[in-house]
Amino acid sequence: MTNEATINKLLEMRMSTMADTFRSQLDDPSMNSVPFEDRFGLIVDMEYDNRKNNRLQRLIRNASLDQPQADISDINYKSGRKLNKNLISRLATCEYIRQQHNILILGATGSGKSYMACALGMAACKQYYSVKYVRLPELLADLAIARGEGNFPKVIKQYTKYSLLIVDEWLLIKLTESEARDLLEIIHKRHKKASTIFCSQFSPAGWFKKIEEATLADAILDRIIHDSYTIEISYVDKENDKSMREIYGIKNSKN
Image 1 (cartoon, rainbow, N blue to C red):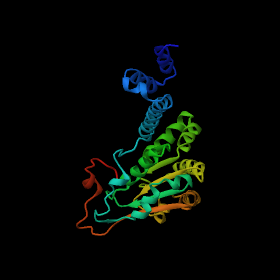
Image 2: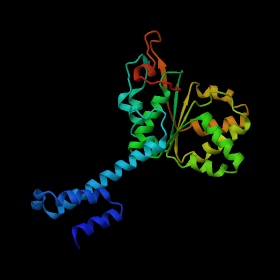
Image 3: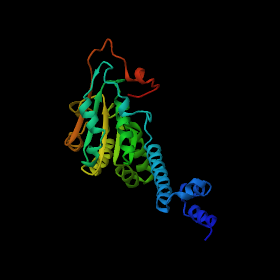
Image 4: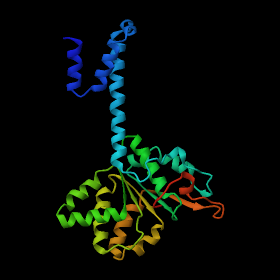
């Protein structure tokens, strides 16, 4: 078999990086003295690294993060607000995802909830977990449309499959009974099977007021709060504090 035939077969098997690396080695006289095992290892490493990188980029793209530039290493712990650095560092390891635990991120508007959630989402992508970011109004609209079009089970399954679901603007407004039931369906199916991050301006005690039907409120909160971590972004010095939007130069951010 000729070298060109080998390259064509690699391309046919969609191993283009391996084919390019093999061709480069053929064109490099210095590679003639390198043992076959080492040359082959280099070819495989290039293909492997390229596939891993493509997978990461695909995960990031599919996550639809509101702030894809967010990064745990860029979190400012001297911005005038109180943050639990040890907890955040621990959560960045994604152990909570392996444990199927949730995270509650609580704080006022502009405190950096969305940035924090997206930074944790990016950390999960980098460990090759499937992630999806969605604002609660968008999620409710998706579910309402799915019911009308007869695709409700399919959409529920879609939101259930992610290793990490990030729900921003959680319970800013009151839910109808129908909306609460739809959310319970997703939360129930993800309970103890996958992790969810909830970003809210209100503490869980205030969530009851946003879910008028008491039985549904109990069911939803019971599945969210137990086995969850809480990140409270509280102000230390409100007068001298700068919002996370100012710190990171973020425009038109929701939270």
